[in-house]
Image 1 (cartoon, helix red, strand yellow):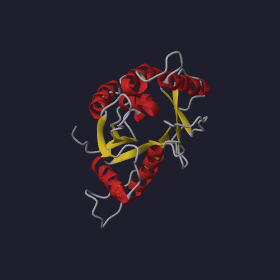
Image 2: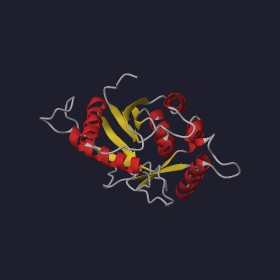
Image 3: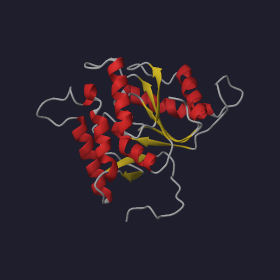
Image 4: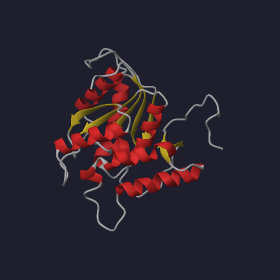
Length: 235
C-alpha cells in the first residue's frame, strides 16, 4: 500500500490484532468521520502455535477490510524480542516522517507482555527523534502533536482511562475484524470458557455502561487533553 502524504492518526501495534483488540471500534469511527487513519504493525507476531507469517498476513488483510481499509504496513521487527534499540528507533522515526501523523496511538504503558512495553517506549523515543535536524534519519523532521494510549494488555487490571469513546455503532464490525484472526483468537480458545473476543465484548459493554452508551473504548493520556468545547461530551 502506498504511503499517504499525511495521516490524522497512526496506530502503532506490537503485533497484528493489537490495534483491533484495543481500539478497533475507534479506528472505524474515525474513518467514518473522515479521518485519514493508518496502522503500523511492528512485528509479524510469529511464531505462534497455530499461526505462520503467511496466515497472519492473510488474517490481517481480511481484518483490515472490516476496519474500513486504513493504510497499513508492517515494520518487520523481531517478535518476542522487540526492543527499543537505536536501530529500531531510527526505523520508526523514519515512518513518522513519511506518513506525518498528527496523532499517535500507542499501547498502554503498563503490561505483562515485554513486546508491548518495548513498543510503548519505542514509540515515545521515535516521536522525539522524528523532529531532530542534522540526523541521518530519512525524511524531513516532523513531530507528531500528541500520543494517546489504548488498552490491549495482558494484566488483569481495571483500566483508569483519561477518556472513553462511544463505539456503539462500530462494535459489530470490530468483532468481525477480531474474528478474522482465527489462529490467535478463535481456533485456540478453550471449549466451554470465555475467549478473548468474549472478554473484549464484555469490556466494551462495561465502558459503555459507565458513560451511558452500549459500547465504548477507553484511552489514557500522560498529558492534559485540551477541548474547544463541550458539545460532544456525554452528559
